[in-house]
Length: 115
Image 1: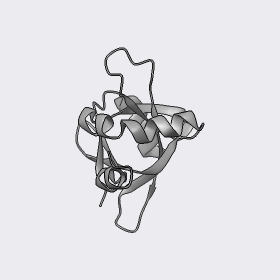
Image 2: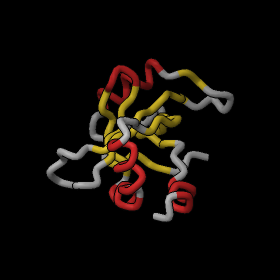
Image 3: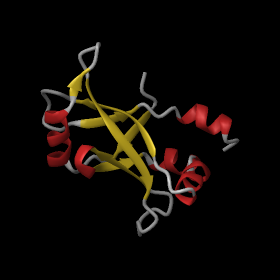
């Protein structure tokens, strides 16, 4: 079950474009490859983790409290020139607004990185 939730999904156009490209998994969910990276230039949140879909479409941000908890892990990725890639699931089909859930195991990362 996906663990992290991409918060503040205000880019509905981008999410809808990703949904149109996504493939259905065995559970019938719309699935895509998501990239999560630190957004060090974000003036509202120094821990901001931006979520991108295929075609570098910016979909939104990881929930603020999860981003703060994962700060050290994502700092390490940025310093070593890497980004996190995980499974993304589009939620809210048939509703006015779509959302994204990330298969990013926040609790496991916190344990492994002693965050």
